[in-house]
Image 1 (cartoon, chains in turn brown, orange):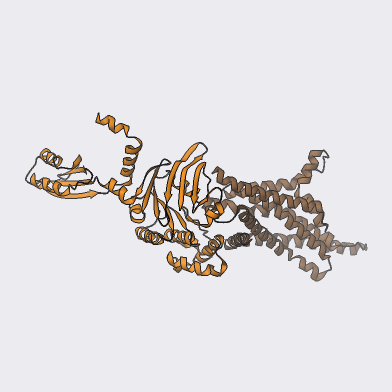
Image 2 (cartoon, each protein chain N blue to C red):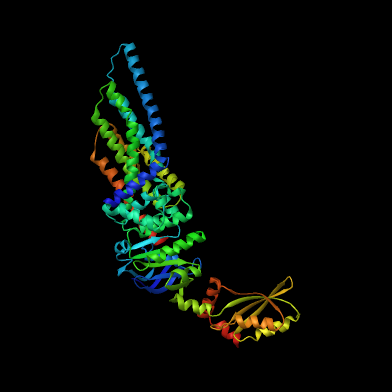
Length: 255
Length: 325
């Protein structure tokens, strides 16, 4: 346990010693500041229109602001994943520091878990920073807090799964650009697989649609925790970390 | 402390190390000597559990590298060829990280970091980023990292590569001072380094051990025959062939080669038979044939010659016999 924490802390230090962490957080803060401003402006505009028209439509903050924001983060967050995971192992392999880790009395899975945890913490921090926008809703309105928390939980589960896959891809190469590029492609595919379900109902299409992360995140954005979605993210996480461990082991046998 | 038997490592089909045997007793310094690509790094990586052997066994402190890697790793300090440092960390941060990684309890960690920083002369840069350090400092941080958990065995892959002469000297002194409490294996392709720091030498070439001996035996075997450069100036005499035959006549001279002359002087390269001191007799021979002695010096036996020597006499003795016939 202390080994995992030791590695995790070292990774976090690396993120924050270089501009990576600050840059990612600043970029996402700006992007989500814009998104938030945009949905609020739309919300205000439509409520004004409703007043002018004399129709009193029920306006739901959760439905009109929180949910679109969470869905946005789920999709735009896909671009964040490769930027976080690409260096995890590729950099250690290139600089030779992997030799230090693999000849120290720590187990492979401790190294992997430590790194994955650091990546997840950085993602969560970025998410937390972007979520500060929601405080305005609570200051000036009365949205429901619980669905928001469920949505954030869903985002973290989704990130855990994708970061595990990114971690695995990073163990397979010493080139960060390749690690990042492949991870990005995989994340993008896991998003767009959902589209197949829109027009095709054959078994293969259902399987493909089932594999899509967005489909499994959607219930969370509505404030619904479904066991099958939790299991999906948990098993994807396990799968990614398991492949990382195999890959790290094969590094010794192949090289 | 370290025992290697029949160790073989193949990369795909290419054998990097073939059937290597050696043993290192506790507290000794053993030098791995060999040209680049000889299999030194591969052997060290197997001993540190970084790579598994294809066949054969290696044990460190009684633990097998394949069966009990965790026990081996606890007892080993390893400095790879390029020090495994993180440029974005400060020196003390890095050493604390490695200390925790090697299982030093947090109560004694700060103390240990201070001790090794002083021992390896990096205490003055402990608050600096590793990225800003010179090569010499990085190498010493790498060494500090290797000894931080006070391991029984130290494995150092070319610890002095890329350092300036003063740093090389300091690093060698440091390594010498570590012997006794640690068993050390270091690799190098510099012969004087082995002579100055090691007790024993294992010479590896093309993945095989070609010689294994104490430093004293090996160097006397190789240095017994001296290579000598001689330069003479024609004083009153002009007869070069007379000089040449006089030099050839000196007892103990085995080969004599005339080199291109420069500004009126004559150059010879002379090799002597093992154990015969010929320099005095050579000087006398020059004077007696009426020439003036400009220069007479022993030429160091280079590693290339050592290798030519070892590979031609031990693995391919046939051609010399044919030449004799």
